[in-house]
Length: 85
Image (cartoon, rainbow, N blue to C red; front, side, top):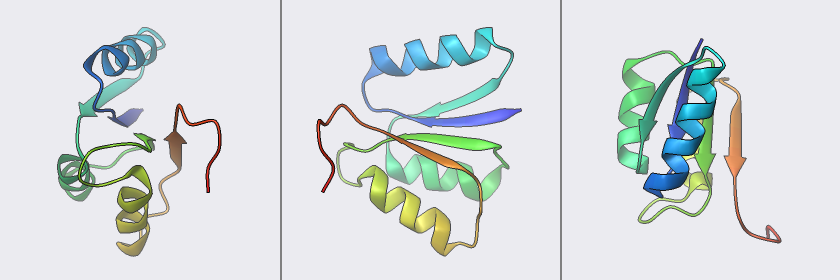
């Protein structure tokens, strides 16, 4: 099963990737929204885990683009925020 990780913090991205890989998942990791949208347009993923607070394009915007493309891929939005508006 292939999972897309979108995380701009290198250390956090490595931790997530290592944990999922150890559980047998194939992980594709990118650090920005543009690369995430390119990856989704070229490959099929069982799931995307997307950081909400990314530079230039938020996780919400990435999710909106994914949904607008017609994809029903499950998306987990990850955040360190203590509240979401």
